[in-house]
Amino acid sequence: MTLTTCLILSAALFSVGLYGLLTRRHAVGILLSIEVMANAANLNFVAFAHYGGASWGQAFALFVLGLTVAEVAIGLALVMLLFRSHKDVLVDLANAFKH
Image 1: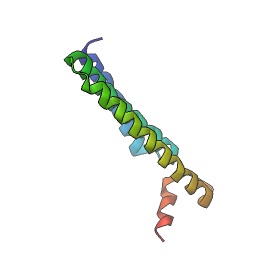
Image 2: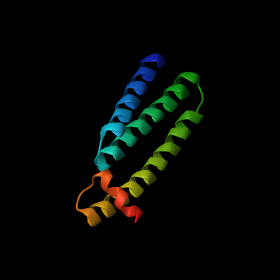
Image 3: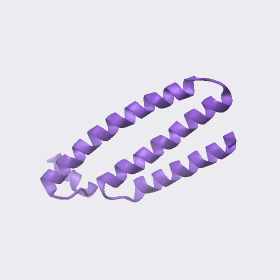
Image 4: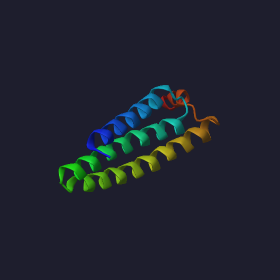
């Protein structure tokens, strides 16, 4: 597997995540789409670290994984709050929290 194929795979994953982010209405689907996009960025970091000979990419990928774990924890807490208040997880219902 070359750097070009890793970058093409990463771009495809990022595109799928972006499509999911723009088209999903359920909060869990949006969270999963964000995770796919973060994993595409991690694939870029690891690929450049592997083919570039630098170890900073792997360390940065581990840091980003830690950030995504925190994002999932906060996101799922918000999804649970949305479900408890509206009995559904549609993002359109989140506008009701403004009042």
